[in-house]
Picture (cartoon, helix red, strand yellow):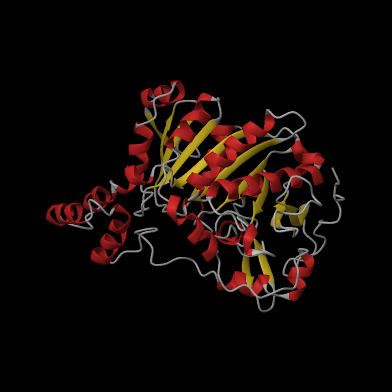
Length: 407
């Protein structure tokens, strides 16, 4: 296989921060099985990645973060949730290290996926995946190619983590890695754990709990719940919007008002000096943080259940952590998560079901941050004062990962 030099994607200077204090790589990894091979359209296609190492990065695990959508940018995580930097100013570039950035504890890597999302420019629309299965194969191959570029970290543990539609992405990517490990000649990846945060796993089971969540939180009355259940019993995908219209709350986090502002990220990534530093082509400016084409292509299967995929991963002994922000009122609220977890029946699930709920604290005499039910291989933590973007609302989640996964 042709291999790209590990130094050609090295980030040596970053506008707004100067010379990075951590080892960083940014650039493009091919979505095909050979770095110089072309896709079916005859054009080279690749996914953008950004790797930020922790201290002694070559000997540490790598957390691969993904946002959801389908088709949303993982720069939500990188700049607004758990990544290395916050943008203080984009016009006159200034970045500030995030105090509880995950790269303080492990290497942190994002891919802009699927093809056509933000910086993963599609040379030909024909190569944009037609469904989530195709998209995950592109993602897996780009990951393999990235590891081929960086063999110094390729044998270290990998932790997959993500939120929302990542509850679909990550079970599929986890299985692709495990399957790929069994194929002769493939690079073996040491997948240690998969972390599903406010995750879209078993959609109809989850959506069926939306009115229960709203009633329990005083957002609607018992009579309104009955009316909504009757009106939307055959159209569950529309029920959350109806609840939001009634209660007027920000459903991502009912204790907050709105999403964080993404515009500084556009401004920063549209700068010529930033693109040069990150080895990004100077092409069209970024104006949206998701891909309409991916959203359209995936729509027919967006409500498919991946509960069997999670069950299969547990049967293959993969450690799975589930995390729910208790203020998340969207379709991924904790009651819906509880409902799909209750449907699991494998040995690891039975151990989980029998486990008692314990307080989650950073210190024995510290404040209660949430509640953990830990069956060993499968665990679920419900986080106080956190919504759909739980890792943004409660930065101490990285300490929970360290505690339960052990890195």
